[in-house]
Image (cartoon, rainbow, N blue to C red; front, side, top):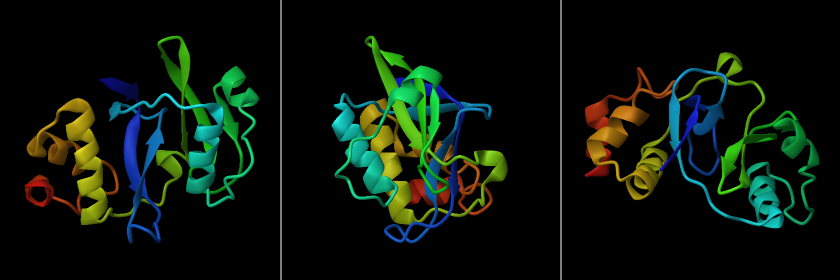
Length: 156
């Protein structure tokens, strides 16, 4: 079970989800449970391009992120690449926004988005509904808008 130092928070608005989406800030305190997939550089680039609303037909140049741990490809959501560690001798990469939690326009995630994240926590970390709800409802952006019991009710 992989966890990273930092904070998961909700900000912005996704046209697909109708509410806020999750971002990762490695500089903020806390731990973020996550999941790693073994993918090729081309597959990683394809997923990143889709999340950046770019055409997924060009390979990303990963040279800078692999060398320095960070590369900013643009100002938008998910356009900052991060090398957050290594697993089995391979680099662990992710993408997030450049502003981090301190500069975020926090917003509330939708029930469908919270269910999807909770399903990932259940599958990858074996978290039950109440543990997942306790985590998600207390993340910046969700906190103050979602109660733990209300999130848990979505998951039953």
